[in-house]
Length: 317
Figure 1 (tube, rainbow, N blue to C red):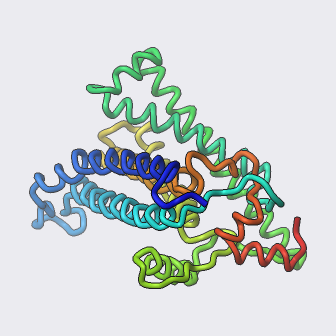
Figure 2 (figure 1 turned 60 degrees about the horizontal axis):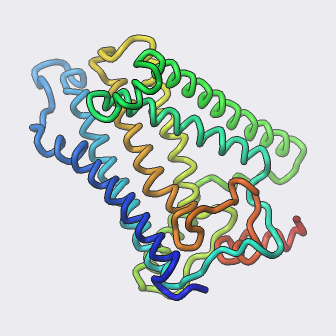
């Protein structure tokens, strides 16, 4: 145990505060300011509905509101979580009996996702902000044409990962069902996740002493997981249209979808995912589960007690 708000806890607080401040500043400058300074407009109401609506403006407004809501939620939720975890002072243990969290296949997919997403974010935003800092990145890569080729290659590799991921687990699920074997979909969102989220908010606000008990995945991890694949669809389909038809296709709607979802994805990864997985006081500065695939029994009992109970009951390694 560490004493509350000391040592590594203060480092965790400093990193989270810096990242959150950067994210909120980005949101205010790139999202809130344009949203508040652009007059609300529905379009030409004398034309045939729904084509009379100003779709580029309305889609942009939808994403602006979504970004503000999601990033604000991430900052508030993780800020409360950070205060609670730092106050308790619990730190992950690397020694002791291990419980498998991720197999080799999952770890390879995770690294594949991390690398391709990082390359896409760097090359994509460098092109979007080419007039500013992006020119440094683009010129270092050898120019706009090369950066676009790298961006497209990373997008292709990410698309291959998505197809493989769903094909592999769908086949595995159908195979087990056909043989009459258990085929639980532990990553699916259920009503329990909603009640757990409400329960945890009450716990973080000090309204209840007991924290919720989680199984294999908690509600934050499921939000992370499904947020990734929502993002890939909203990014991927418009991205293909941009590549095939250019920025002005459909009045620029693919460009609006692609760039706004990219901003939401990057900000949410920085503020939510990296905090949950690495920068919180328990795991700071980095969890090694994505490398080793294992977590100690003591840590599993602290974070996923229902999963440990299931493993013990079923006699899994």
